[in-house]
Image 1 (cartoon, rainbow, N blue to C red):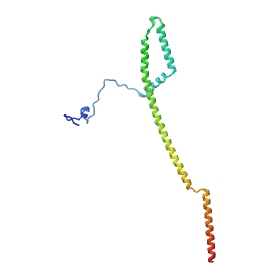
Image 2 (cartoon, rainbow, N blue to C red):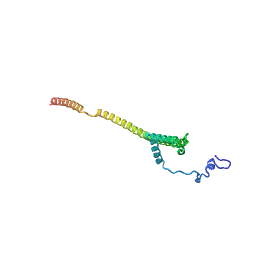
Image 3 (tube, rainbow, N blue to C red):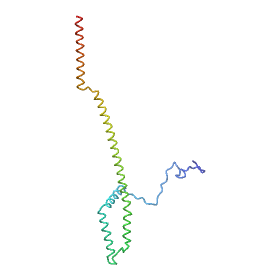
Length: 179
């Protein structure tokens, strides 16, 4: 669709369509990091945050902090009673812990999804193999009905011998009449 200037919307937005876009520099710095290494790091932290050891360490840290700032001489206290600095530290720890835990959960969800897809593919192969084997067993059963068994062959041979005896007796009886 052309405008009054004779240029399409895409040409106005991107410039000339037959030429590559110019590289634009951004003000924000680009962070180069390995997402896999960062993900593994976040999983280690999330695992540690979910342990009893972390709870014991955090309880001991807070207890020592509160005891020191409540009972130490006034000149040696660095965070007096409403413990603003402790609150800041705990808020900072929580603000980093929550996204790291979410990242670890997302990575676990991705692994679970891949595992689910592999299990599903394996189950589909198992069902396919089972159906194939079922068809093969059915065809073998049908083929076994057509296979000559020992008893059937004996019965057929006995029947043929009776027929031959009958024809021989007829022939012998027939030949003796002509003589």
